[in-house]
Image: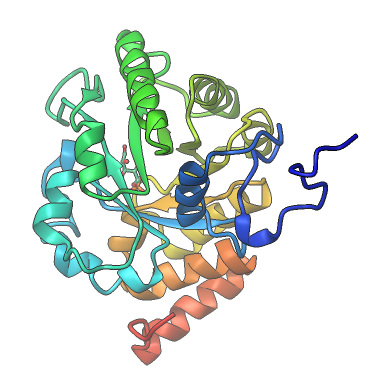
Length: 294
Ligand code: R5P
């Protein structure tokens, strides 16, 4: 006999995502709640705004004053990814945007071993900052891959204890080939070692990367591209099954960042074709309406 406590009815959608999409394993409430703050239940997608570049690049173009850049973009960002220093110094605590905290670091662009990263912020501090998730970069294939992977799993263990999702950033060194085989390898390793979400780069054959990774994938934008190309890349990722983007430079270095994030939203949440999203971008830019509300 079926226990009266076990409901055979499907869970209502407002519990999304109650269960893992592939295994069906139920998530604890806190983890499910944080995941649904990052990946929006209405579309199952997310537009994460990445402004964490300063942790290894210093004041990069467009982020000289993070507050000035980010404030107009916040109404259109599903999450804001940044460091604890940027959060405390540039972002008002009354904002209503889920925070994804960068918790790895330790090297700069001046170091030959760029991205030989360790833990730079504790889970206690992440909790103090009321984050929705934490992000950690792993360097699969680098000489020092073991250091980054072991530190990543330490963060997963600590974050898991408090129901905090960890986003694994599959960083790529200058000498590494960015192809589907490599991205698939790095993404799968990240998921197997406990990532709740994997952030990786868009490459040809991206469907293979998505299909061999059991957790949601978001793409980084990478270096600034002309707007039509960046929108095409986002669309390719969505069509291949990605859960969204975690985009930085292609938004905040755009000739109209607000128009650009709105165009990216159209691709990610509404499945807009890249050409239509670019037309939206141009239209918003021309009318100077990029700044109106969602
Ligand atoms: C890289 O490790 C950082 O997380 C970046 O913030 C990230 O790659 C996203 O920014 P972008 O779209 O500029 O590549």
